[in-house]
Image (spheres, rainbow, N blue to C red):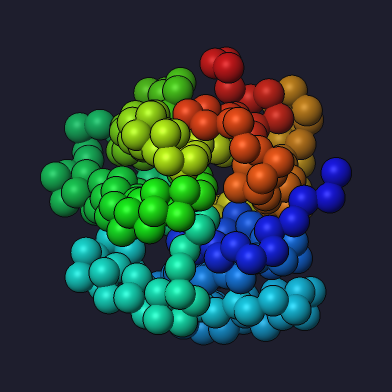
Length: 258
């Protein structure tokens, strides 16, 4: 199936690396214009160049900390000034942060909610009015499988992501009458920069780390960011026009919960 996104504009948070970069690349190759938000200007510049080498559409990075309300509002205005609209919103910012419950301070809880939940809330609130007016919109909240099946020691991320799951369902119900479709994609173990940094911190060979941690999974391996991006591209396209309010595990069978 060839999926096209011609005429659409996508905004992707956490867009300079990993899943965000893979989605930005896939969308651009399918014809969408893409705005990428991330904190690091240098990484955004590298991402822009990498995508332009593979796609001809317009792509631009915006340095922004989505955990900060004023910065996010200012960057939204810059995106609209540059692209004119946002048809597709991908709330992808945030890395896994976990620890023993009694060691998690109020400050850590607040930081996690500001980045992973309030960033998504604020961007959805900005995007929804025009999506409803045009009667076309797509929102994907990138969560992880802990949102459905939290493990001991998985706070604060599992709690924040569970809240994102509830947000997804609420937005899907309110958006559906206006053809604004809202879904969640739940990450399992997928190759990313944060795994690379973890393996380096453990002084482990990166490929060996992937093999060892991936072996117990039902599919016996880590997923690839491109595999994640392929499903995202379907969900935000006209081909996914009757899919909303779902939370899809993209985890190679890792989660015990469907």
